[in-house]
Length: 396
Image 1: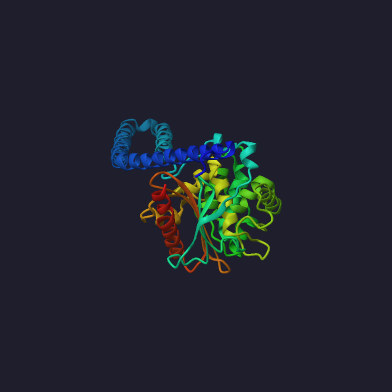
Image 2 (image 1 turned 90 degrees about the vertical axis):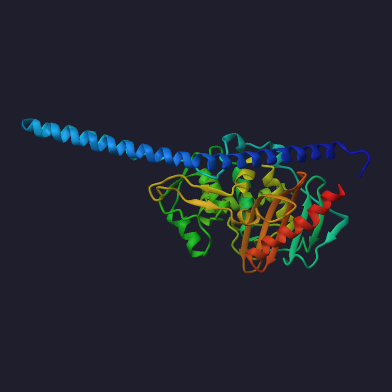
């Protein structure tokens, strides 16, 4: 440790500490929401059942009473029937409303959309030192990297700067670029056949949006990450830039601002294989660090589940899950993994980028590529956090 830190290093450490506190606060809020939902759910169900029985009983009683009046006043039966129909319709309209909401999702407010110009243009980097360790046989992925965010030091690595296809990890950059240009998460976008066919023709994962379906911009953000939906990603790109090609130019401009343009280049916003679509796991770690510095991106990347808005095509919405976060949450990492995005193409195997903290709250970024299965990818991240991040905590 240097006895005296430069002003830039002090600012960087202060920023890391602020971000760590924000993540811990967000996590506590998530856990509290889940506990609250679990506690009130049985009562809510019971109350809904009682209300349903009461409404049905009242409706039956009302109709029986009305029928009796009709019999007694047969001379005005036509007029009475008209009134009865109006009352039944009103009752039906009242009973048709359904409680909404997005259980297990994190709602991003519009205040999260504006980052400072300084953050948007910041150059991210991490440095290997004499203490940087090579990764052993406990990790199967051919490319791997673990970075200590407090010191911007590469803790452990394996072939971290070789070129790979980032597959759907690409979508981290997609939402980062979009987050810096979107102003209203509640604005809507109409899906087109061209967009939905793009996912189908290229055999991509999709949310399941349909041609002509009107969805919110918020739905596009979460749909891009949790189910890795190509339909959501292309929809988001089209909403922001008018078409995917123009948006990809914005992605490459962002890489330039991040200081990564010499080693990273994108040709699509989804992660489809292309020999000119590439980066390294190191580059992806820098992209993820920039994303978690953006509050909206951090919230989307940390969501375990999310339910899209109700539409005519999907009256109950579509429930999505970040399976990496849900599969790793019960594994012993020596801390907690808070944000993640996976990817897969044949040429790069199973990939993942994640952000986690150790038990003291110290932040790390982990990126791996070319594992032989999605589960192996998860266990590689577990091994890297437990083997190296935990040791870092003990040394501190």
